[in-house]
Length: 333
Image 1 (cartoon, helix red, strand yellow):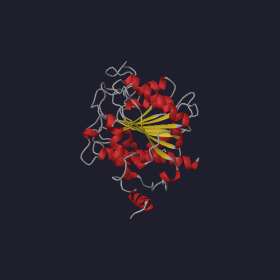
Image 2 (cartoon, rainbow, N blue to C red; image 1 turned 45 degrees about the horizontal axis):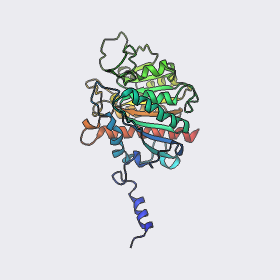
Image 3 (tube, helix red, strand yellow; image 1 turned 180 degrees about the vertical axis):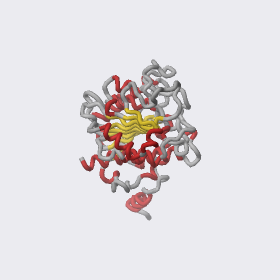
Image 4 (cartoon, helix red, strand yellow; image 1 turned 60 degrees about the vertical axis):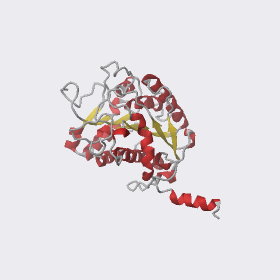
């Protein structure tokens, strides 16, 4: 008859297999206390901030938990096994009991992340539409925030769209929406636009711009066309020069990727070349050694992903890269 030790030994043998066990982010322990971890993995199941497209972004965290177990590996380039060196927990999802009300929900998101900030954990989050980034930034950055040391953050914003439409009072009724967060976080003192960069902007705007890279908000806009023209290495130099010594927050909208790599996204920008996943990873590696206080990935649409869930798999790869960047910084700090 097998003993309890025998069963435990069999469990350990099964750990490498993503399809075994309870699905958490990367098969990490489930622990809702942010004070118990160094890096907090959090789902933000929110869809009320972007009413102009499909509304299933709130299913993103569950889709990533389902596939991410296969990425519980070592990071070859960084020579790092993050799970062995740091306490990395799945904290679960932000509770959003009024999920259809964007304005209430962004307040609830901010409340949640203020607790994460006070606990000193560095969050890597998966959404959810892009409205979630605004309240996260308000909790982690600016006056009184522990994560940023009270400083504004340098925002590294990967996206096909700029999300700084402060010339519009609302987005189909949502005020702190997926279209506004990149502006109000600057105007209200959480993001230092002079240190920040928007990467991969592409496609046709509502109205032609004299200069697609010009930003009234103050961001450096590195369009997809410019990035492909000057190359990845020069783009990384521009990004790091822009950031300087500021604390960094990274937000990654999956629609910055080419539809060949991420077909299951909310604001699919087809027909115009987007970043391939390997190019996005190379840009993320360009942030190595910087003080990344948090990161998020947004705008998945699991209900329109292809059968092998390539968008979810790509999202889990990017989430893995982000948490490894943070772990790599922490071990050298």
